[in-house]
Length: 327
Image (cartoon, rainbow, N blue to C red; front, side, top):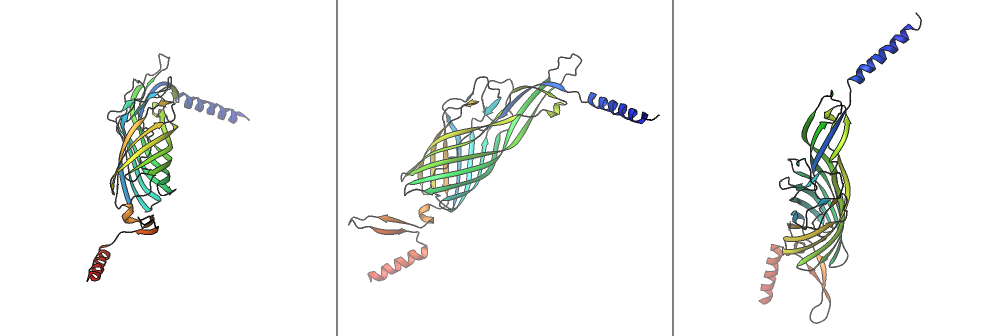
């Protein structure tokens, strides 16, 4: 009969659609999450001109905590932060005003501090990442330096996720489980610093910031399969204020102590934290870079003195000329 074929096709489509949708039944899950995230620590390099062609450093960002961090009341986050967080740099300075290189950071899982009481334990793996460093050191005067820098790190944030079905239907299939995974993300750190050269030491004050990863601790979600359940990592920008004092142990070795305070208090509140940094350079500034300085002798006359490194051949020539003049 005319028109019968379209009616049959429509009925077939409806039948297939019903079969498909019946196989994709959504299930409601009660989900809990925990994550180990880095604290938004600053770069501990001083706001100073480069002290050599090659420079390396290693720092402990969390030597002393004024008090443990805590979450804002009612914040739905399940976070752990490292009790010990380390960072290091390897920099190349083609000029005294520029530093380029690599940076790494790791927060150890051992001894991690819970931000808030949680019924879900922390992930087993540590958090950490590596990336690129770029900073510019702009001399304002003989003793004062303005420092502008940024870093970009590829970071791994481990998470633990537990779930169970929350369907009120007694005939529904009950399912529960727990798994661990990691989220790979990009974290940037920027800062503007001001440094003062005190001769035997160096003082730095800096204002900077970086993202603070957070997560959703407890949620009620609907999925067609438990395989669709994933970590829920989010980010809050945390500015910080840093004050550091560096002691020159030698022309190639420097030890600094710094204290920093995060200026964002939601969803995590931090008290001041103290860190230390050991910085080594291949060649000192006085040896590697030639520069003019003005000195005033006892006779009151001012003249320019050029400071430069004497090579072995130049020292031998100087000694030979001095001996000939004595003869």
